[in-house]
Amino acid sequence: MIQRIQSVYLLIVAILSVIVISSSLGSFIGADNSITEFTNLSLVAQDGTEDYRPWALFAIQMISAIISLITIFLYKKRMLQIRLTLFNIILTIGYYVAFVTFIFMLKGDATFVPSWIVCLPFIAIVLDWLAIRAIGKDEMLVKAYERLR
Image 1 (cartoon, rainbow, N blue to C red):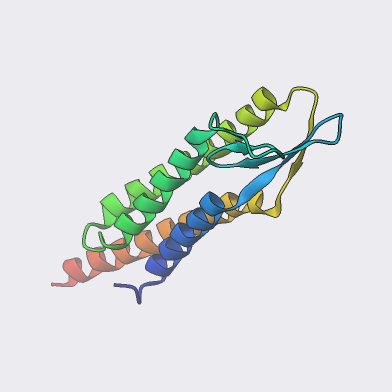
Image 2: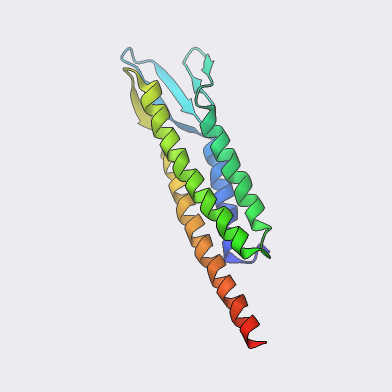
């Protein structure tokens, strides 16, 4: 049921999650001007060494993308759709909490320079909220039709 607006919102949320997974979140610039790239899966130093400490960010975004895609196909179970979308919002807020925690944990004496990709999960939260509103309107419409029968 991709013609429903909430399905479009949820599809965009899944696409945004995949973009966040595959992009760099920023860089740590050290006092000696060394640059370490911060991604959802690892920290990549200039010499090519990788540190996989921020793997939890990757897992959270992957779960968020999967939940969004699954929720699209639950159009007959609107209350479950609302619950899963609300869980996705909570998961994305948890992503931001983990992101800030990893920045402070991994920062040391370096300076963190964020990428524009950091704002995409916020856009996903707004789209999830719009999807919840649209699913709620569908639920009210179905209940009104049942009352008329």
